[in-house]
Length: 428
Image (tube, rainbow, N blue to C red; front, side, top):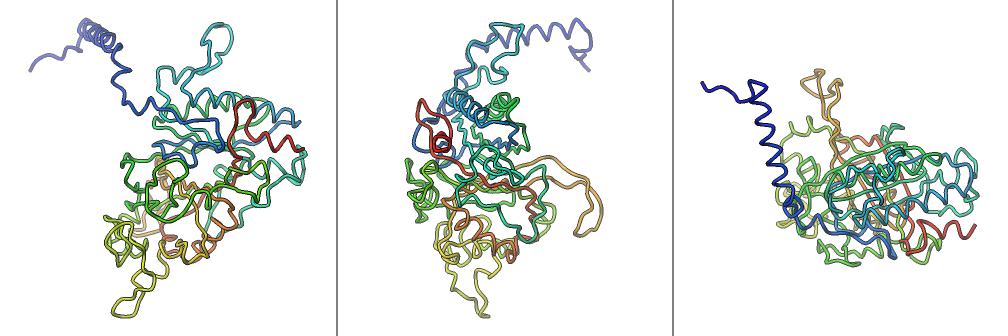
């Protein structure tokens, strides 16, 4: 048997030297070897915030913050700093200069140096606590709280934990590179010292299914087939009839500072994947209301076939079951209620817990599921209206548990020279 070259220090150093040489030789071509799409940028300035109608990126880093600022001026200063930093990072620019004075903290952590912008978007939201916290109007904004920014009601079966619920401010960072997304939130968090603290965070990922294909969630089913058309600035990804302007973006109903904005509901939904994986495919399809592999509604042939909710089988039972996820979430059966889903899978490792299903033993279970992200014009007529029924009747509930939640008002876009949510403060 030949001797491993790393068996001696001399052999190790020789091999290491060769590795260094190879690394130096390849350094010049490193940038050129990166996928061209990672060099693309998404606009920050404009009538609407990015990250809502933007074609979905592959990675998410979501963060919620609690405000500690004592005065409105501190809050405004934070939002100004966030605006400047967001415009810079979405354009693919690092803080300059880097490392000029090594006796002080650097203006940027530097972990994204050499990375391309990867279509980074940063979407900012205001939670109810920005307006009233513990019954106190701490910034003089209580009268400006939008009626649509309600406190989400308790839903049947949810088990919300504080470590993934609530927040006064939210930041949604999406990018095609996970480190770019994390770096962006990290830099924004650095700017909050003395004004806000991190409350909770969540990462998410989306497989590369292709721009013209509906992604699949961790249960193996297509997720987002009936999303409204993204026909604001882009070619629609699906033929489902629905305008983003009608469904997602706030119009003349205002308030003024919210025009062109949207309301986002986020829910951390843990999936009992071990239980799900033990069930038959035809049972899973009855739970969802769609074929697992084609995505077609039960009774249909293709993914985008219009579901026939009146169809019955030979025994007179609905082809699409009354308790199916598809039926209970259908716009036709919810008085026109509709949302834009922009969700991501998450996997936060495993937990040691007692199983609730056969074989009735303790063991490791995945802490994984769906980080549900839904944008809408008014959550009272969108998510709340839809999920009130779902939380009580959806057969999927036996496999899922909502453990985190948040509702945030995302103002309209930012024009150069202004800052995020400036209209809210100008009117006070």
